Image 1 (tube, one colour):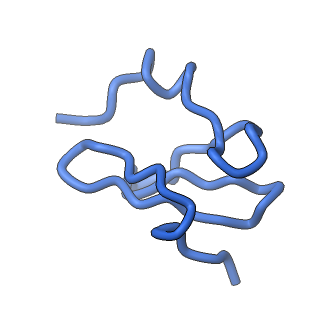
Image 2 (cartoon, helix red, strand yellow):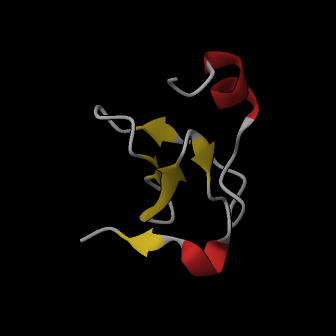
Length: 56
């Protein structure tokens, strides 16, 4: 089951409150401002700053 588009409309980066972009393969959400990637596991975004992955 893909992530709900309505949920994506209300989600924001927990660090800067900026917009998030869904990756094309729907495996994560990316904040371009903070350069962080939040994983999506079992259709649930993991929105914890300490679990985010830095973009390279």
